[in-house]
Image (cartoon, rainbow, N blue to C red; front, side, top):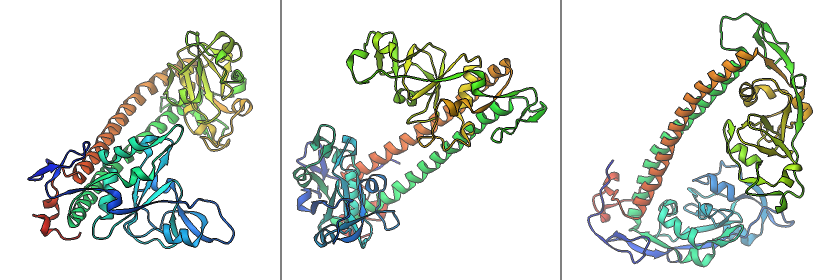
Length: 453
């Protein structure tokens, strides 16, 4: 839809804001609301009153703070209860974070929350009645230009914080109150439509990923020929397999060994940008898909001598952080003790990559992910299907083709989601800064005719 601008504009007096509608004003936040930094933390103190605490995570992951959220338990003094109990129309923002991008992330309180307090690391902003609408303020904090002024003001080294002075003196475009409500109502409607589209696209990604996982699982355990005779594998998670396949524990096929790390790992003598072997960290593996093509660090000869070097074409598996993630290296690399590798392996690495990629293989060992406890013994004891060599190659080639198609579809859907989210942000910014006139979209023809929505 092509949105219309306002009929007349004026200079706002704020460089980053530029022009605003002629009947709007620009106000400092302290002139239209009260700003308080919360002192209520998660600790319980004897003699204080039990409360529920709205914390950083609640604000960061929710646009609206409502009573059905699972708040943290804490205690607070009577003064803190009086000052920080959440009321209708309050806006809460993150006032410090490890990232500039997470500064001044807002959430809105649509109704009074008895016994729920604004917690530490947050600022409570209470709009002045008759001057500023809470929902409009919430949307304003979501706008790119308005939010950017807080990221610039945030200071710190490892954690960035927003000072009260900068928040108090931040600039906000301020339409007449009823028009604020109309803008908020318009954005509620439009963002709900966009969010519904995004939700559908995310669900589509989930279905495509489920299809991808099922495709891999079926190919590596049942093969590609649906007419082949089957037999019971004797392994519960595996079930029936082609009759001519074998089943073997991994330790019968190769020796499972663990990587090694130079100590202390942060000593610069172990690293050399001109070195021959890359130093693989968990983050390098999680950032890769099937193949390891690069790493952020390179080892010196001394560092290599204290680790485990692998040649291109070898497969290894993470057993720390992102547990159970396989990868095939296409570069010379060294792996630390958060990985295991396979000595004397004769099986097709590509086939094993797909076999290790699925959840089924780890059934009975625990939950796949950070909670799964893997080591050389547990991996060595896993039973796997062993097709003939030519079938392993055929299965790997088939999965390369078919997963590439699904991955391309997933990438397109992700791109669509990114465009929708970008449009959402742009729409909010345009509406709250007066770049588009949305009054007629809620049945309003002039500022004086606007009624509360």
